[in-house]
Image 1: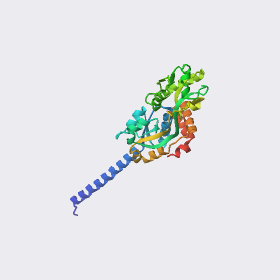
Image 2: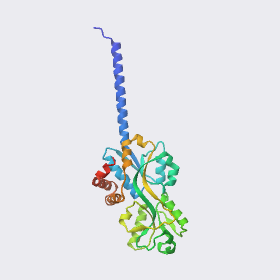
Image 3: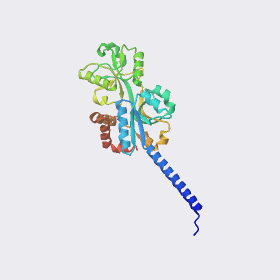
Image 4: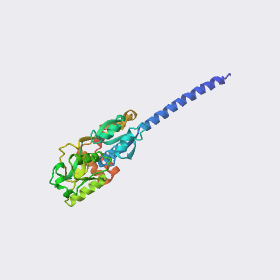
Length: 289
């Protein structure tokens, strides 16, 4: 029997090459699928941003995603998402088009607004409801009762800049005190407990509206605009991870729903509270997927 070893060797080489191509393609496919199942969310240290982000995390993890959360100042979030090699995919708490207008002017051409986590955002100066004034224009006449202070949050927040503008526009003889969101709420709680007058920078959505009897001061000069809590992404996110992008496009909470989520987080912690609220509202959240 004559055996053509050269021919057999050639056939074996072809077979090995075919198997290598198939294996390589399978690895590429597997790698692509794994990448599509990874999402990194950047978020600011604000109550509603923490709530949106952790709810998204538990909902996506329920679908088999690996979700990484990175806490950053808002300016750093915009800057990071605008990079070609961004380490993040989305942020769910961008106050647009007004409060974060400067950030959008700097980075917006390299970002995409893909959804709205909350569609009725408002900002302004807030006082307990027992305070007898109703307008920013009345603050100077009662400076002593407020100790000449407006309790604010970090200087990186858009509301901090708008409050400096309000001090100028209304010629207020007040100083804005920079603090954290938690410190601001603690100050409000203490003042209400002692029935003292206090004025803080405030916004909706925020759990303090469900927790305390408070009101906005009228803003006749329109310093504090209305916004949405936008969901923004790096360019290419929707193309890279279409299923995840669909979820973020559809994600949207009403005020009552958000306050329920914030309460669950307040009582149980960020991850456990988000999981509890997700399980209790699974039909709603799953409709976004």
